[in-house]
Length: 401
Image 1: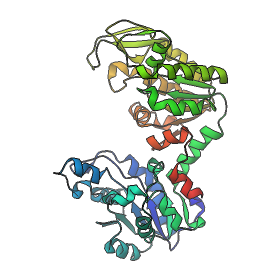
Image 2: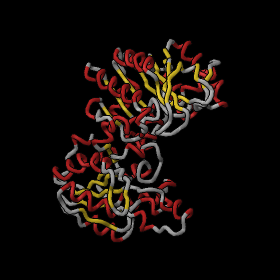
Image 3: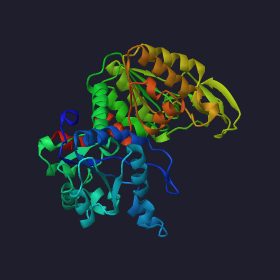
Image 4: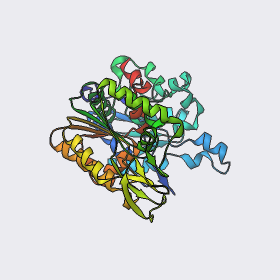
């Protein structure tokens, strides 16, 4: 276990997720970099040295589509400078991840020193999970630490295959990954009841697997966002121009039947805030969600739904939130998502364990300044989704093997 390991005199090879937004060489959101700091600092405090590796973007695929781009457009160099300012110490940089330069710099590291390798995805072998490539990376450290939950669902060379090169005691999760796995396993395998899952977003098809898996775990499932209207249409309701997956109507009915058979309560929004067009300046109205007039579309849950959903959340001991209740990016349609975020925060204050994950849900708790009011905010959107779909994540399995 990472927190119990003494890194004194050891070189820790740490897989981080530094796939951060960079505009004109400047990092515009350093959340993922800051999330890795406790792990890096622990190794350095123990008297160890650190070799960091990460991907950034999809260089080879993007260059193929846009020939004016070069590998230099995908460099991690700006991250090295930013990380140095956060750590208050020099961060060395190698312009390749498996070159002689990388090997030489890694071997020369002294206790307390940090080296960042260039973008792993400069090599197609990374995403292919190539064993030789993973072996070359493995030579750069004495201990392997995976602290990149956001890529744990990928069987890539640096996230899974590399672990085969290290003995059981020399491969482990970092503090961020430890926290992610612990929070996710608590919700999925050790949840206190009532357990409410709040599932939002645009499409039923995107969330079908997670909903089906949660039918085995949750007592209540709240469904909001655009996907709710597929359920209302399936049940014979009128949804106007609201989002609907016509080819998923039978699936929606099937889910409702399965939930009923298992005694799981599905909560759909009784009413909706409507718009006459999908735009920030749209005219608004409200209606029951199964009585949306022609020419109108539901873009948020209504006040009745907010009250109903909030009551369910207030009684919960475990809460999973993945997906917004509406188009919260537009001020006119943010009320529902904000109210649900506040309800989750209030339930957490009353002793519930709450896990928020998925890009839009995380963006919502950030926007409404509630990050510190929930139990855990997951950094891994796709990875968390696949975890709750019941899939085995290669990055987790490789460490536990």
